[in-house]
Image 1 (spheres, rainbow, N blue to C red):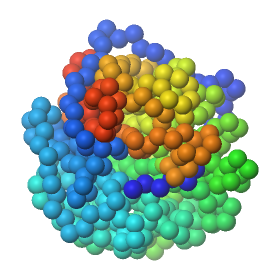
Image 2: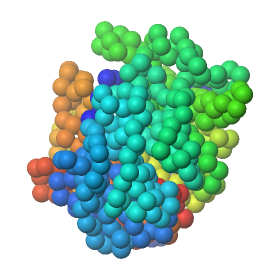
Image 3: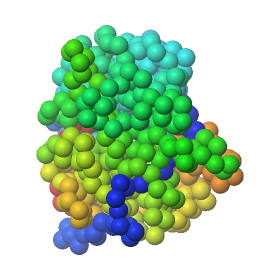
Image 4: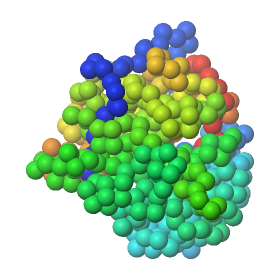
Amino acid sequence: MRRRTAVSALAVLAMATAPLVAQAATPSRSLAFGAKVLRDAGGEPNVAISPSGRIVLADGLSGGNDPAALYRSTDGGKTYTRLHPKLDNVGGGDWDMHFLNERTVIAVDLSLGAGIYVDVSRDAGTTWTQSTIAMDVYDRPWVGGHGENLYVVAKGFDAVPYVFLSNDLGATFGAPIPLYGTGALPAEAGGTSPTPTEALVTNQNAYVDNLTVDEHTGDVYVLYGIDSPQTYSQTKPLGTPSRLYVAHLEAGPAGTKQMVSHPVYLGGAGDAFYAGFNWMAVDQAGTLYVSGNGLHKGHQSAFLSYSKDKGKTWSPLIDVGTPKVASVYAAIAGGAKGTLSLVYLEGTKTDPNVAQNWYATMARITAADTAKPVVQRVRAVPQAIHTKDICLDGILCGLPGFGDNRDLLDYIDNAVGPDGTAWAVVPSDGPATGNGSTSVIVLRQSGGPSHGKGVAS
């Protein structure tokens, strides 16, 4: 299971004192969502939609002897059947999965002590093959692919995140590519990633947040955060990952590959963007987006930035969460040019570390690739999905100021289907699912404007 050690803080390179806030929409058609409950499926759900939209895979981490509690729909989400993948090895969860085509699904499974299990299905989840990346890691692996190329990223026990590349859909992997630090060559490529000293000596608190592959170009992007020495204090002895970067896979010397990083947001007083809980997406026009999820300008929310030059430069962060209350674990998914689907857990108080009612909120963002994005929100499930605090700090939960409850664990997920329909999966242990053990709610858009053709998920 996931291990967390600290929170992160992000700050924009040049910003006015007043926070940038997205405009609220006044749509003629309201967003609406239907819901299916996957009973007792567990936290940290994942959803993937096939290119036709007919096949939907959804899961939570309560898998028992399976890597996840995996469910499949073959009728566009009307009905679901539990699958039991037969695999040689099952790790500790943190399963990430994606469709590469109508029948091929790729997934990765964290195993503390044995490396990363890479699982591939060529029949939409019925049967699976498995290979292993034999390098030990201690945090959630992410996976993406393009054609027969498969990419995995995770943080190793040496504190450096690595990218693993396979040209035969996971059968074999080449040498690991460091995200930054020793062995990385950012200066020669014009990048500005953390230096080896920062990566390995002064700035240890780094986390991989997300991996995204552009389905049209095959460009590979990794979102990650790292702290700065100024964030260390008696109350934060491990520091705060205050610098958010996106690394782009590019050609290196003598036919090699390297990750070239550029900053999205570089730390500021009072910022606390939580390590490992930020998100990334690309739209059909190739614009890249980051959702920085955390405390900024006094608001616990989702903050959106975009890049139109493959991650080299980034726009200032704009608040797209619900005003005046906490918005946590935001995930974004790309649709048509400048259009995103957004899902997050919306509280009734400003501080997530105290008990309160939490609701599943869905939003459609248009003009997301401009300085004035427009956000249309809806409470997708009328009843609360959680009634306690939400601790965002992993193994520090329970310490003073950090909250206690991780029943929902640390992630939610969303997607946009080929017909422009928005999807999401959220965990619930509250009144929405009858209180008690954690279930997964699958949300499917049933009304409102289209998001445009979705980017493959």
